Amino acid sequence: MAEIDTSSGGGKGDGKVRVKKQSARVDMTPMVDLGFLLITFFVFTTTFSKPNMMKLNMPEKPKDDEPIETSEMKESNTISILMGKDNRIFYHQKSAKTLTPEFMIESDYSKEGIRTAILKGKVNATSPEKFTVVIKPTDDATYKNTVDILDEMSITKSELYAIVDPTPGELDIYKQKIAVPKK
Amino acid sequence: MPAIKPKRKGPVMDMTAMCDVAFLLLSFFIMTTQFKGQESVTIDTPSSISQTKIPETGVATISIDPSGKYYFGISNARERGELFQRMAQKYGVSVNNGDLQSFEKLADFGISIAGLKQYLNLPPEDQLNVKMAGIPNDSTKSELGDWVSTYLKEVNTSAKLAIRGDAATNYPAVKQVLNELGKRDINKFQLITGVEGAPN
Image 1 (tube, helix red, strand yellow):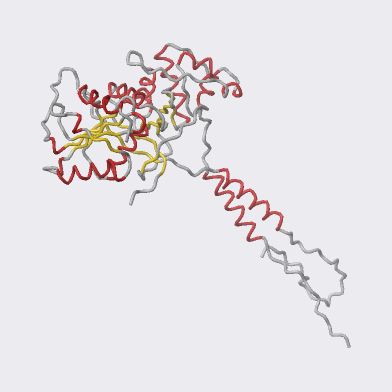
Image 2 (cartoon, chains in turn cyan, green):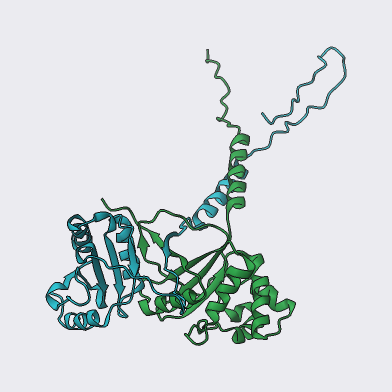
């Protein structure tokens, strides 16, 4: 212990008168109080919220002189997701040519909504390992919608996905659909 | 005959050890704390289930507020001065040491390079009151793109680029950034999100 030995070492027989020494013990209690007070203060003022991050790799922009590689994808192997105004979301599994309003289905951001649609599409795909999700945020979509859908990609473990602009045909149908309020 | 009462002593505890622990913890907390610079805009990020944490250093952050204004900041204070010098040179703006020093204190900023010098000359208490107009980022002239590519290609080539958008930010504002940076061959982004539990 932090205590200085104050007992006289020499014994009593030497006849000298000794001044009774004061104990060098300091009461540590207020110091402990102060220490813990400061710790409490620092703990409460520190924010531990370290944000997370999500990776997003965009494809490289093709140079003007390079030919653009295109590969045909089977309709059943893709799902296109359109994010729209007021957190509304639509999906379809058609190519741009065959898409009609009946095939564009409205869904929502819940577990039963778009996640089930993606998983169902994956199960019914002719080659599930090539199943591609095409994410098409419209100009009415928010950043949160985009992040939510990218999140769905990791939840449904869809590794093949792309963020592209909606085609004019899709936008037309989207506009028809968004004009009707959600049931 | 009265019984001999033993002299009562209050229970004395030796506080030295406790004191040691308290101050040890205190010094630990102080040493590990990193002070956050003043951020010019509050951004409410959406949340995701992603578990990757953002690195402490070597991150350039583009913040996009709900009205689509852009802010830019880099995490390493030492690199800020170098970046500012290079950018000032490109845009033909003269900077002195005072400007550099006050720029190094900025965690992020959202102002065009022409307005930046004026902003830096303001006293710190006035800087807080300035409403920043956002860094210009048009398809014809993108200062934001220049800041990012100067940082990532000349100052710190191993840095990561993070995009910190508000949940209410409209997608076109994000698309505009992705397009501008795509033109400059920057295609890898990190989206900063809040924490959310994994779904069942």
